[in-house]
Length: 152
Image 1: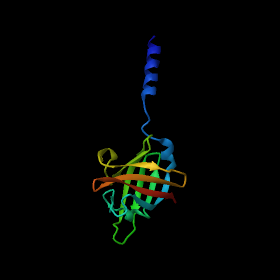
Image 2: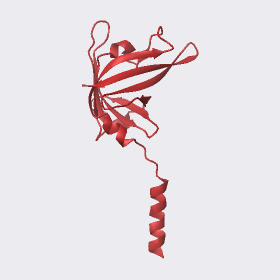
Image 3: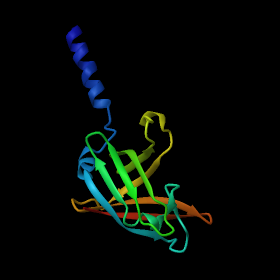
Image 4: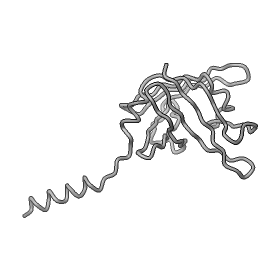
């Protein structure tokens, strides 16, 4: 009787657990990528400060590396001109609902101590490209910013 009750409790725990990550999508991002295009749907003339770092256009040409087995990554922004140079490690995940969530991790800081980050929707993911769609607000309206990546 105890054994049946124990097995029933384990089965209930397994069935009630929802996955917190989309492993297939995450493995699909493994590798090195270049951000090749930024689209501001509905707000082409609105300046967007992406990730509180620089204008969205400064990210075109930026290099991103995704490591799926430990959900780490690295970004390198080196466009030059009026765009700042920026490099950082980050932690990331993709939820089963297709939400790409990431946070920048400063050197010497553990990810669990970073409480702020960004959430975007993964769209049109293939072996060679994918898009991240972010929402921004301007003038009381919501607009989409789409970041298109291609595999290096």
